[in-house]
Image 1 (tube, rainbow over the protein chains, first blue to last red):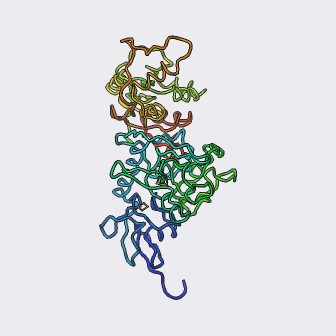
Image 2: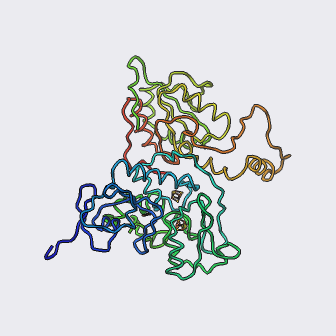
Length: 256
Length: 188
Ligand code: SF4
Ligand code: SF4
Ligand code: FES
């Protein structure tokens, strides 16, 4: 590099260069170092809610998606301690919802599932809640399966900030927190959601689905069936499946 | 993943497979090992299995593969017997591992479920909810095997592929550590 050296921090003993203003997560991904994450999306302001991107900086645990990189930081990411913590967070997300992967249209292109594979989650470990969360099939083109929501708020952010429609919101607190549809009837059919909306393409899991597109891409040929998430997320693998057909969820940017 | 002690050299490994609350798809996949079953039969004694017609789960089993969630009192009893009598217990497939299809009934009460299945959807006969005392009783919820007994290893898939089962069983009966390639870790 000519002229001024880029500032650097160390992650698990490797130098990671960064631009001033970049977060640890952004700099790591740009440098080809994967840090597990779920609620982060490159096109949106970091949200810092899932905590999967947690790292230890100089002995303190922080969310790497909301923490600015600083020259000389010593960042621990893939230590047994942090990986155990991430594994637990993923297990919590599984047991809080109803995740029946074999019948889920998102299976194979789901970030939660892919992150679980990456972390080697062998079983849910904790007692599943088996909550009752009826689906909303009222919209002519869109199916909402709330059973799989991980409350990352990406659809809420996309609908409000990009689409200007405020179709989604969260309601309730703590373990009762859940996604709702912003309409007096509570039904998706009574909102202005359209299939072209940004909110259609940001869900990391299988909640917001286009109707009549199921299994267009066969199981086994989907994004993370082809390449592990730690390669897709840092751009080492093109997020295209073998057949070259568009993904059933539209041109997804997740993990890009 | 825990390794088992190698099976005693004095006899062939005693292997069992059990079918709890599952659709038997995992066992179909087991049969999909095809000609490798012949090789396996040369190495092990299959001491209990839905394909072996043995009525009582035997003692002193080395490895047991358990298909299905625990969904009724009979499953629960079987799970405890299997654990007591087996050195290494494997959750065999997604229902044993996570509840999966069997647990999809969990959003209904047992009463709703029986009413739906045997009365509301019944056709052509006098609708009756079976209530013979010898029948297994549904638990309030179908749950993964490890919620009832400690489990030593998990095989994913709905069902796990024949290749995966072959690798796992081969390793376990030879007393090797069960380490499958990452490509086999697939839910569904
Ligand atoms: S959303 Fe992901 S983890 Fe949940 S059922 Fe679908 S594929 Fe599985
Ligand atoms: S529906 Fe999807 S995008 Fe929206 S909060 Fe739930 S998981 Fe996130
Ligand atoms: S990705 Fe950082 S908290 Fe979710």
